[in-house]
Length: 270
Ligand SMILES: NC(=O)C1=CN([C@@H]2O[C@H](COP(=O)(O)OP(=O)(O)OC[C@H]3O[C@@H](n4cnc5c(N)ncnc54)[C@H](OP(=O)(O)O)[C@@H]3O)[C@@H](O)[C@H]2O)C=CC1
Ligand SMILES: O=C(O)C1=N[C@H](C(=O)O)C[C@H](O)C1
Image (cartoon, rainbow, N blue to C red; front, side):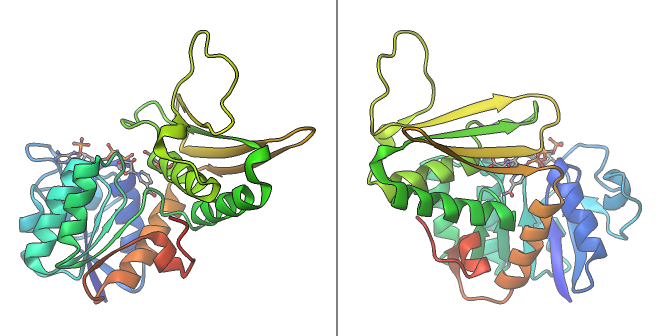
């Protein structure tokens, strides 16, 4: 049994992770955290997450959740909290799976520092399907080459805090690498008299509204043809299932920072 702690267990992803971990035959929920001062603290974490009892009380810090011992922490909270949680995992020698997005360069560097002490899998999207789409997008860009204009469009629910999504940023990075472009070539917004589209540009656009779980499309606009590569998530289970797969893979590994491509045995695209 892989002893697993779920942070942010009342959140959209936290509650999904709690349910799938509780249902898994090979993982056991041994700890759960909730925001300090919230009504969930001290309650059965499953009840607080409106799932039914899981037999573990939600506590207000990761340190406390780890007191009974754990093999892996699964963390979908925020970039800032994930960095703090990674430091705790590094100090306690516990493996970590991070799904949070919105990392600044400094936060990414801090995560990499913690990964010198413990194994960490971090990815902006844990869906197996999305990771294959990322790979296919890089391949399409390489083969189609500079004659196609490339644009990334993402849509998410109205509560999402970061923009563009972590997945859209990853797509933009792998497309830029495949096409020999740089961060300077990414266009995050257009407005007014912008003139003709620069050939090197890679557009990254954001939609927000309603309960959209997560949609990403890469457009390759050519002369006389257009390719659209789309992934649509209709619930959060596939993100959580990917995170559980990462947890099984990372528990007991040597320290290091890994991506979902490593978990899935795919060649890294960037
Ligand atoms: N990698 C992937 O596959 C996916 C990644 N994500 C990412 O996961 C993250 C979480 O998304 P989502 O579940 O929708 O967000 P939610 O806001 O629903 O959940 C976040 C959870 O973390 C808790 N939390 C956040 N900040 C703090 C803090 N400072 N102290 C204590 N608790 C805190 C929240 O508590 P409270 O509710 O009290 O605020 C909540 O329980 C986002 O960064 C999102 O982009 C999402 C889906 C898939
Ligand atoms: O916040 C979300 O909901 C999601 N965030 C991730 C991202 O930023 O890429 C992944 C997924 O699309 C859902």
